[in-house]
Structure formats: C-alpha cells, structure tokens
Image (cartoon, rainbow, N blue to C red; front, side, top):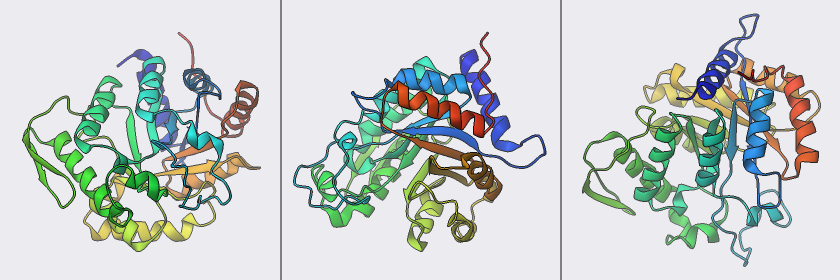
Length: 313
C-alpha cells in the first residue's frame, strides 16, 4: 500500500466515523459518467483527491442498442454520454494507479459479463489496488442490452443473482464450483483472491422494495438507493432494510449504505443529514463536462462539506 493510499484511507475512515462533535458523518466521493469527450478520468481523480474527496465511482453500459425499445428511466432520449462511457474496471485501474482513492462502480452490470473472467478481473483490481474496490451492482434497465449478452430479459434477476454467487465462490474458495440454472463452473482453482476478505463489498443498486431488501440481506453487503436525491425518502426506507437485514441474521454494523446525490442548494446540509441517518458514503453526481465546469463544482462541494485537502509530502 502506498503512503498516498494509506493517508487517504485513514482520512476517509476518520471522516466516515465521527465529526468533531462525535456525530456520525458520511464520507464524500464522486460519481462520474466520464467519456472520451469530457474531463480526463485521471485528471478528475487527482483533482478530487487533492480536495479531500475519498472515492470515485463509475457507471457501466457495455453498449446501447439502437432500437431503443426499453424506455429511458429518466424520460426522453438516452443522453449522449451513455453511448461513450469508459469501461469502468479499466478506467478505475488507472485511477487506482495514480491516486489513493477508494474506487467503485455505481453501478456495474454483471449480467453482461462472463462471471469467471469478471471475477478474476475484479480480484486482480482489488488486489493490485490494496483492497480499495467497492462493487456496486445493478440488474440494468436496458433489456436489449442485457439480451445481447445471451439471456432473455425475464431471466435478468435470476441470471445476475447466479453470476454473483459464482463469483463469490471463486473469490472465497480454494477450489470453487457452481451449478445453476443459467451458469455453471466445474471444480476449479484460480488466484489472485481479492485483497478484501471475504471479497470486495457488493452493494445492490435497486429500488426500495421488500424483494430487493431481501436480496441485499441474502447476498449483498449493502444498498445504493435508486435515484440521485433520496434524502427525503430514506428515513422511511432504511428501517425496512434494517428489518430484512436482521431477519437474515446479519449484523447491523456490517451493513453499508452508499447514496448517489445530485448537486443542489444546501449540499453540505444534505450530506450531514444523510450521515446522521447512517449513510456511510455520499457520491456527488457530477456532470459529464470539461474542467472549466467540473473543477468549480468540486471546489463548491469540498467547501460545503468541509473536506480536508490532501496534504502533499
């Protein structure tokens, strides 16, 4: 682990646990749908680290089918950036090599990957980054995108669940095997294992519902609520998640909640309120834009949330 990584992790952990008055506060990171036409990814990551942000998370779409049969969840046309997103694991490897930031996906789409090779790629990234990867996953809104990877859309939920189960076997067992309805693995051995034990945190990005909370409690490590301004609804939803988590015999202290938050007036107060609810990390959703737009936003958020700038050595 580099000194930059260690210093950044220590600072992030300190912020996510307590403020000066002893109140629980959330770490603050960024969510960035970067493309080949927006601010370069490593430049953004270094600027974020210098200002005290603790993490950088990237979204994923392997492709967007031109037919456009699945309505875009945000309404209207699919934004141009969706056609040009960087591959998140490759991009995050560059971020990890040039900064000490926590790196993550918000969200990855494991339904579009071969789970054997995908598990190895994630284990490699987590190992080489010193255990800094957080795996936000989703089922994916675009049915045609999912079907192009070889499965029918109605099987989306069971396919993703099985692929994650297979990946967990590879990460945790010296000899792994899996026999599911959709995917299988003959008894096999593979290394490296992830640096984090038993594996990187798996956070399900999904709507608040009984079935999704049950999924989180059964095979996840936490939740990323759907939407980017959920502070007003979380107070009612989190007790339902806590109940499902407890019913599954899981320790409340192990539950991780990461929230995506758009820029809005009073962003500092919003982040503080989310921390008081028990949210561990808030990801500020920044635009797909160039440096002249993004850097002032980073300065604004850093000041509003009282981040501690990274001290150069």
